Image 1 (cartoon, rainbow, N blue to C red):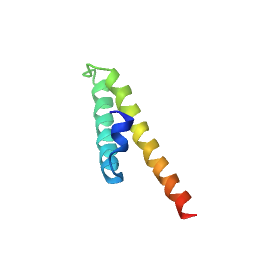
Image 2: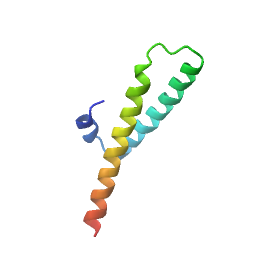
Image 3: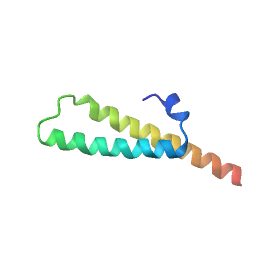
Length: 69
């Protein structure tokens, strides 16, 4: 997913997306351990999507803290 697409979502939607990605990452790791994973690149994609969402959430948190000061 693109960072610009993620920025259009609100925090609740981002958190839900993050939870879904963590679940998918767990399933992908399980499949890899069982030698059933066909697309190894999907692991990297999911990890990067998780990092993107966490970055956007952190940026928003810092922006709120600056406004509060």
